[in-house]
Image (cartoon, rainbow, N blue to C red; front, side):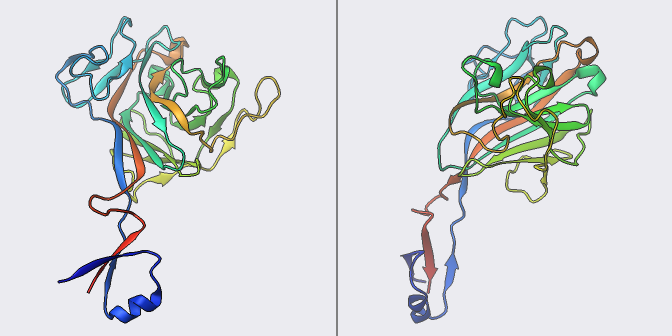
Length: 284
């Protein structure tokens, strides 16, 4: 068998001259930026950069009374502290490059709202997890806001207590006390779509994801009367990804977020040995 590589812009006339051909379009590969399945020995989560907390080296609330702990069964148990605030989290720095597409995937189990409270997961925007209420504001903050069976999406991970923009993003129901999967997709132009799966789903290309992007705004304006940025448009550049619990309401704390998997993929990479995604491989 002979093979030759031609530009994808090769003319149809040239293809016709070659006779019967098989044209293979190299599919973009997904490149792992951050990935952790928490398959670590049981015990307290180590300091960032200390084994096994090395790849990625998650920052977390080491001073918390009840620390993050590995269960030894591929789960990170994150307490929802009664003191609320930003007392329990994991996060890591990332860089979103303009013109690249991304997928943020998380698999987790949350208790019912009355036991565990609300959880934030996604792009934190800055180390404070403060979004639009920080100084300067983190206009690149975008994250799920899960409250009971409701799946929200916000540009302020402080949630509705901050009075900032929040939307309920679809008709899928988050099922408490069982494994659930959520995904944020960011296109090459920064357009955000949001997705859910009832169960454990880690492949961002799976056709089993259910899109949630339909929006119903709860807080359409900022407290100062200005419009919030469009929730479904991401700014590229430095960012922070992770998970955090923020509520201090007594009846919404005391449970545990069980984190099975978290990953960020660059979806615009090249396939191995393809040379260039703009090429065709033609077999004669």
